[in-house]
Image (cartoon, rainbow, N blue to C red; front, side, top):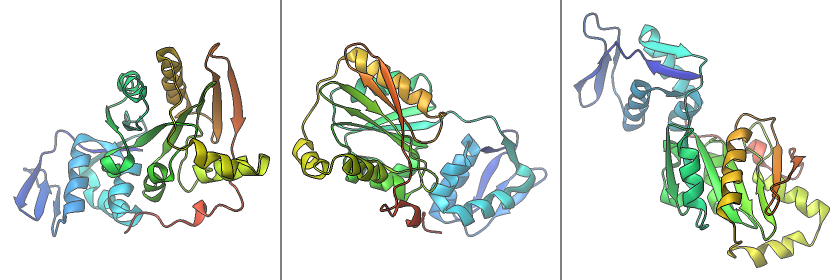
Length: 253
């Protein structure tokens, strides 16, 4: 859900820790405003998603703030354009970010997840070679922010699945399923971690386009792209019984 304080209703600060929506009349007051709530109010002025508010405040406080805004809040089912983080050191990360920029509200590229504030984004695109670093994926999972990998190999690219924390398989589930198919994968993965797979601009463009399509696709869908012909093969991922992703705590309330 996209939510926004009505643009016709000014949000002004009364003191450093209190604000009000509306001048004549005052529609709602906000007292004892902490830094997180101030940031959330700023997001509501611009317009944001309920998912992002929950990432900033936690589900309970987010719901309470929306309820408190009352008639000052304008709701619509029209989706907001997402703010996307493109994470990774791969040489095609910049090109992927450029392609995605035309279809979203903003794109920021970071060499690693630690280089960005995860709560600034609605979706993360994790670009890597051969394997995705847990250090890049776990912060998005912990903050309940959707994320999707683009993994280049020597023969093409794998895009997906889109991880919706708490609702779909995570990247840990994907890795465990891969070990089920080939028990040697747990020994192979560390050997290719950090290696770079070469990718053409054409392959990166197809990968970025596929990423956009997967943002609204069936849960768990993964697309495997042939690097020469761009032929596609689709697989589905599901929750793995040995993964604890469904029991991870959400953002602090």
